[in-house]
Image (cartoon, rainbow, N blue to C red; front, side, top):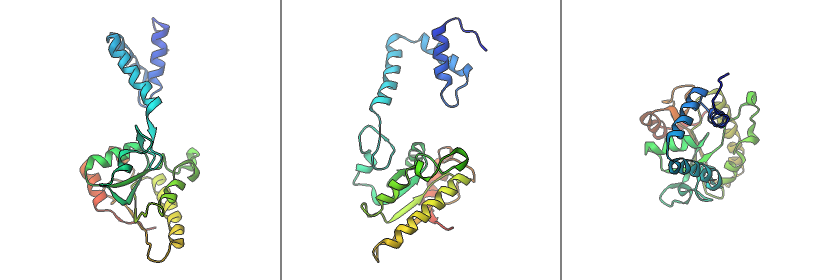
Length: 210
């Protein structure tokens, strides 16, 4: 265990090292970097973190992060409001937006079904997705989840839930369920897929098949 010359330095390193992907050596470099900065710079840094926790919300409609109760995408009248793209997390929304190829709405699940990790359907935002379909007159749901076993399991569960919903819809009110084309390699997370491949996968989406 590393001995630090300062208890306060050690505590700061502990906090940085608790972040995903940050080891103790990297944490120490970051802390020492902050020590070399002016008080104004460090205050701006900590103020941004405080504001992030206190003022950033999750959109009450699609569950992405937002400065407002409803995010700008959900508020926009220039988006295709009959299409919803279902993604695992906020990073996936940003990745798809960066392609410039998709102009509909989103629904962030906040995870995928993973029994090994104790994550079931009730732990993610599936019920709120189903609840959006009729009130918002959604015509297509695009499943854009990771091409992993957990992602496929979640796709299948959502498909079955939406099938049950479709059976209760009035005649003529159909719902298309599609998934992104498999240009995204098996096992890949969307946020690590290049924008061209991801954009083509959205544009060339196919009907979901069990």
